Image (cartoon, rainbow, N blue to C red; front, side, top):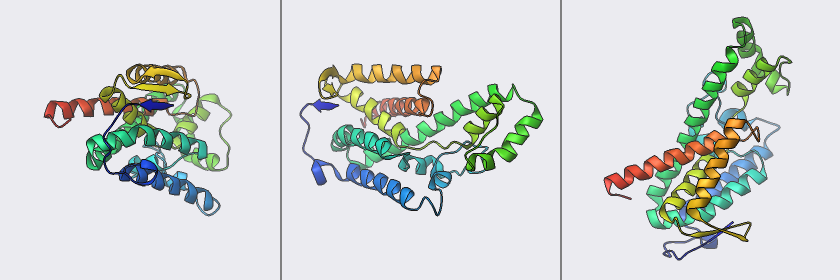
Length: 248
């Protein structure tokens, strides 16, 4: 994906990146490096990934820390490439303080939406189980999950997966940035796979619709589609709020 349009030069660092975007990329890369280097000593995903409220691993700081954790190198590169491409332009326009505010609000908002969707799913799953089964999942499920095991009963396994699978990645904030770019520069031409031209506003609409479809249908399980949408939703309302206040 590439973009073409003229923008102000602003303050730039390595590879033409403004300082905040550059620092965010460095921090995210360091988190993945440390996670892999010390994975035999401790599991950072359990400590810093965003867990469901009732999980024994849940901590309030995870609404921030989860944004700096990534599942693998591909996950990191995809997010950081988008952060560099679209975030660099937004930081030049907004300045680092407002850009950081936007990044954090959309990332935390994405986490809240992800847990809200998990809550809705849990209600339907728990309706299929007895109180004894639910209690057994909550008490025995975390240990089974650490051992790479789960329950044979389908609903108990689904409940265990939601409770004990952490959400990780900067995708929610990145999707918020993509939404902001589409709102601010709607007619900028993006080149998907460096070959297919599409205007930014249409790209954002199509991407959002796909995320909604994948989330509702359960396609591509293991990807937090509703967190992506949550980042876009929080980004949309934050930009609208800034416009109303005349600081956009």
